[in-house]
Image (tube, rainbow, N blue to C red; front, side, top):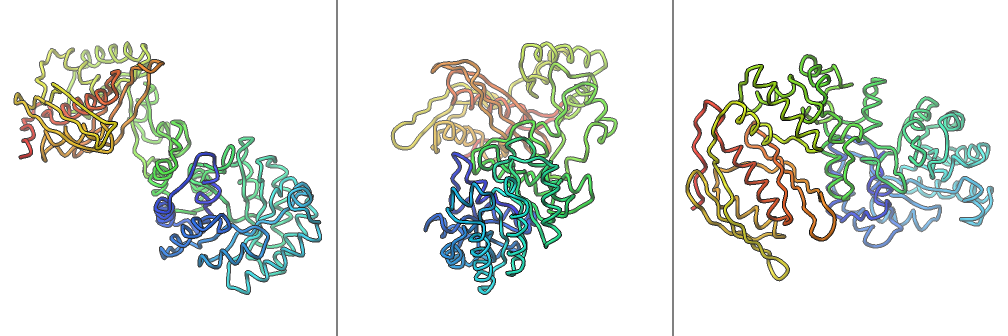
Length: 494
């Protein structure tokens, strides 16, 4: 069960629009996630309209709404045409007495009534014992038994505040699983969300609540992609379409604004990226040498990057990717320059590598595209920009408008280059490398055309200038003929 649209959205600073929720729900369904918690109908009219938007998509997944332990919440969920509800009831005495102001007997009675009511109205029902990891196990068992007796489809062990250990989780879930189908809901406050999931599964649970990228309240929930790949790789248990995971992670990261950490398991930038000379050499000889599973399994590609740890094998492979043949002596010279740049704390881009190779081999290269002038304006009305380029010896001028000065300038560059410059902007990243309002920024772009790709960085105090310079330098490399092959520059757009 994925709860990105409910528990994930409850993370501070996240607010998903109806279009974003619908888009993520479709992506979850493409990944064949079995249950999608679309939201909490009791939140308000806007949330109910959003849930209705998801239920109208005709998804294969079972779509649910979160409901508190009151009849009105069940009615609101029914009004949204959901397939089921996740019904939360208090389990720990802290929640029973202090939060809800009832008794243990009152919880059992209310749970029985609400489950019966929901089942009578045709809903799939999962009862969640909130704060179950801090509840008296005997009472939690009483609530679970009452839930099943009333017709609930399953009962969920909830480590609501990420409090518990795998050992405690195993002991409690073992007891709950004897009563009927059992789920687990874990948080990562102690860094134990995944461990508690596996403890739950070992104890007999068969449904896991997850969020994409592990977003959620406080330290977040257990990550869908990590649970799915671990079950596949370690236990041969198939859950979702694994090759959809990376696209799903990117979609959620973009919609929520929560950037993926580079070292994030499965979907982080570094998960299948190699720089170390030893690792690169081993990976080139055997794909599985330094990877637990092929990147294609989760919709990724392997990347070899260059830096202070680079070795000859990696540099030679990178040069060959750009069509550059080099002798052993030339490769050694390029490796030395790559390491020198890496030692200064710089990332070595494709443009740096090719410049090193040209210098070592004594090759002169005429630029295909060069930025001569840039003017951009924003702050009032429509942002506009004009550029003057030299393209294969000819000057070209173009202007553009956009959502901001960078967007306008990029559109102007594309217009100046014409329709044949069909390069795609794959990645755009900005880093401030000095402090203050006059900070110098470095913009790194990755662009591709056909099967060729190039990464380039440019620095400037003006982010628009740095962005356009990086893009122009990338296009210059992409439009340049591969060594030994003659290719005409792109024609202007009339």
